[in-house]
Amino acid sequence: METNLTWSEFEKVAMHVGTIIAVNDFPEARKPAYQLTIDFGKEIGVRKTSAQITKRYTKEQLLNRQIVAVVNFPKKQIGKFMSECLVLGAVGQEGDVILLAPDFKVENGLRIG
Image (cartoon, rainbow, N blue to C red; front, side):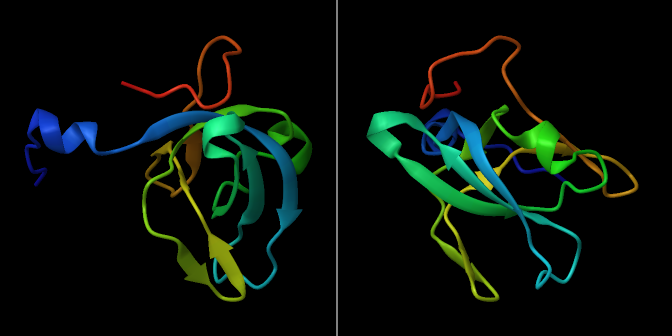
């Protein structure tokens, strides 16, 4: 069951647009995943994360693609890799993820609201 949030709680979640500038295989991950490097603009900078998005996307499809991510979660150690943000997507019944993204190219770092 989903829990209702207050508006002030929602405002604490920092969702921003970024552009994927590097994609690498992540063979150490328990489930198939990529390591992503994402540019969120001058204010936020470049962040790294891993994402289990190998069912729908190739590395070539992801490079230079804009996505939406949460940038204010604490860093999370995943094996030898440090995840610095959480890429957002719709999760299908088979566990495949469809990334959330703006319809048009926008400035990196824009906040989602």
